[in-house]
Image (cartoon, rainbow, N blue to C red; front, side):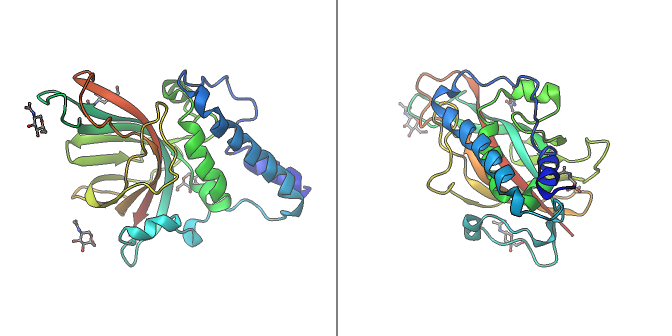
Length: 258
Ligand SMILES: *[C@@H]1O[C@H](CO)[C@@H](O)[C@H](O)[C@H]1NC(C)=O
Ligand SMILES: *[C@@H]1O[C@H](CO)[C@@H](O)[C@H](O)[C@H]1NC(C)=O
Ligand SMILES: *[C@@H]1O[C@H](CO)[C@@H](O)[C@H](O)[C@H]1NC(C)=O
Ligand SMILES: *[C@@H]1O[C@H](CO)[C@@H](O)[C@H](O)[C@H]1NC(C)=O
C-alpha cells in the first residue's frame, strides 16, 4: 500500500471520517478554535504522510510522560506503561454546609475512559489535541456512541470515586481489552502548566496528579498519572452556586503496571 494511504487508514483508527454528528457543546463558540486546530493538525499529518513509510505503532515501551510531568515523582522502577486513556466527564463539587465566601468542596469525578494507547505511541501531538478538542463536544452523546467525539477512540474503561478519597478506574469494560482495575490514592499533585486549556466556561484546568494503588488493584496496575488536564476546576467561592454541581473536564490517564 502507498505510504500515505497507509497513514490515512492508520489515522482512521483514531479519527471518525464521517462522525455520526457529534454534538458540539453549546458553550464552545469561544473555543471553536481548538476544534479547528485539531482538524488542521490531522490534515497536516495526512499531508506529511508522503514522507512517512512506517506502520502505526501501538508499542508503549518507548513512550514517556509529557515533559512538565517531571515535576511529579517518576513512575516507580520496574513498572511499565500499560495503557493510556483520554478521560472525559465531570468533576463534581458541593457547597452544602459552606458559606458564600468558601470554595466549593470536591466530591469526586465521573468519566468515561477512551483507549488512546496507539495514538499515544504514534502521534503524541494528536493525542494532546484530541484531549483538548474532546472537551468541546457533548459527553453524553459520546457515551451513547461509545466513541470519543470528535475522534474515533473506543471506550476502554470507567472512572468513578468509591469514596471521597478513592478514585477508582475500571479498565475491564471492553470485550477486546481486559487491562485491570485500580482503586487509588493521591501521591502527588502539581498545578496544571501555564497554557493548559481552560474549560467550557473558562474554568482552569485541574491539577496534574500521581496516584498510587490501594489494595485490590488487578492486572498489575500500580500507578496512575493524570496529565494534560483540560478544565474541571471549581469557581473560587460558593457565591451563587447550587448545592451540588459538576464541571466538565477532559484529561489523559497514564496507567503503569508491574
Ligand atoms: C487499546 O488498549 C490496549 C491496551 O493498552 C492496546 O493494546 C491497544 O493497542 C489499544 N488500542 C488502541 C486502538 O489504542
Ligand atoms: C457526579 O456527577 C455524576 C454525573 O451526573 C452523578 O451521576 C454522580 O452521582 C455525581 N457524584 C457525586 C459524588 O456527586
Ligand atoms: C465562611 O467560610 C470561610 C471558609 O471556611 C470562613 O473563613 C469564614 O469565616 C466563613 N464566614 C462566615 C460568615 O461564616
Ligand atoms: C509517594 O510515592 C512514593 C514512592 O512510592 C513514596 O515514597 C511516598 O511516600 C509517597 N508520598 C505520598 C505523599 O503518598
